[in-house]
Length: 386
Image (cartoon, rainbow, N blue to C red; front, side, top):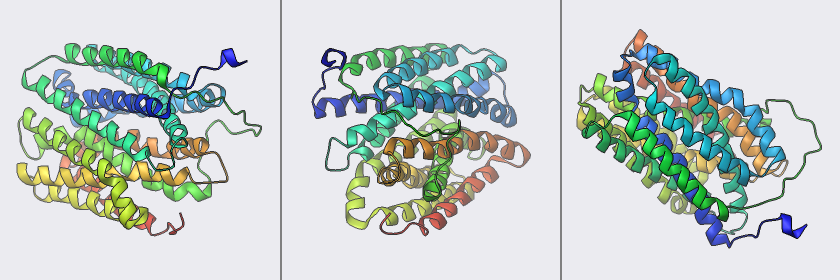
């Protein structure tokens, strides 16, 4: 029996290994996001066409959400995380080789599917790693994800500036991140799978207690991925900036989001989770409306930085709150919230393209800015003891 259970690394090594997988996730996704304007130009797509193609991502998520929940109930998050990481990076390589819209659609379905598998298992691992520590560390994992996203965006800026083709850039990232996954895997946390006796429907929606958390996370992730998918295009269309400046705007956004997550724990200890979430909603609205009402380079940068600060701490803190729920396991609560929140992450950004095509890109960003008000409203429904 003991021979079948892997030796447990030290908590420090486990924490480092889990952080590496968060880095892989953030770096790979940011590499894709940084090249969306290039892919749009290469395939001669307008905003509506790009929006339609981006719908392939939520299709992949929806198709694999039941599968991911099933796999996590049967196998360890350690094993699923490795499989998800390898699949995610392979699909990233294929994105770089897509030379026609239909090819990109097929690849993005696989990319969204693998990302869902990778992301849920990585966060499930983080919840388990958190139990090894008396102090909160889960926000730092998300800060590392953001730092990796910043690094990926910075590399994307360099690639765009030197006119490096996507079929060189993205496969190089995918292959290197696969090797890093294999390197870190041995130090990840092994936990026996706890079999659930109750029958659950194929799609698990949040319990009533978790609805408010799910809505807040939905808005935050919708805004976050809108910035990933459309920030560069916004600067090209609304600010009339060059592609390198548009990529730099995304880098400024990532700097703000990364900084916000690394200082988030200290701020929570001083003023509490509820106030941080309240201010986050204000920053989202303030940031996007600054960029919309003042479509210039400097004000756009400032607006994007406010937006980055706004979304930085919402999801980590919501996950932290969900992990305190005693009526269900933290992993189940996390999966339940993710069912709703990741729909925002993947379904709202494609809608931005349709709104932009029907009106303009500034109107579409204003709509997302208004969603910050939903965060403020829903936070008012959170009790202090939550």
